[in-house]
Length: 237
View 1: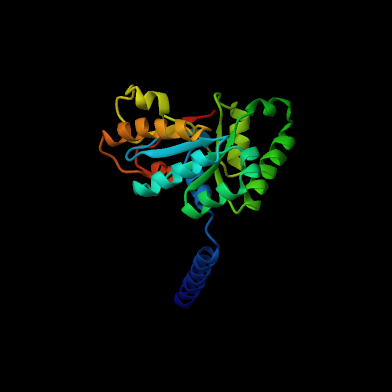
View 2: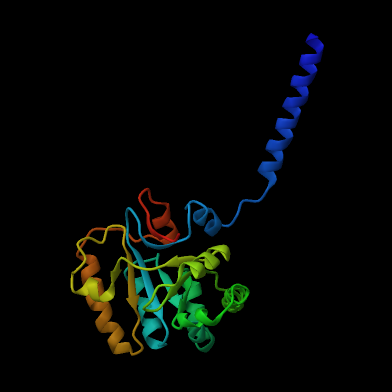
């Protein structure tokens, strides 16, 4: 009887060791998957607990974007996300390369979100996959998605979550930043529209920079904002 239980215990131990080894050998999912899997439902990121996540929307411009990259480097701002219009990515290959070399995060800036209204679920999936492939052609890992002016319906946001996109909105806009309407920048996703003209870019950045430097904070990535203990997302049922 004693030998029987010893044998059973030994076999159980061997099985547990094998299972543990198998789990350890399974490759971990990409960081986006780890983050999105935390939440009970897909949602739209707009706030964290600490730091400031700078995000820039780009649909036009060449000189203005290059100048902005230089200013960010001068000010030692190494963490930010650039949301790029797909058509702009195709037109401005050299500028895109500079963004990539600078090491900033990249997201898709969809200036025509109404197109989703005419797409079936299978077509939505293919459209998102085609968009990702376009960015990959330029060696860009587009982990984030943002729409211009309007929020997407829940069904589309859920489809994006399945394609491993994190949908990002904002807590503070550029206008609110310069008008000092935000009570606090702590944990904020700040959404800034990059102007087409260089002079407008210089003027806008001066105002933004003054407002940002007027409060104590550190710049963080969107993933770091998500990892903070009190991240806020607008949950989608």
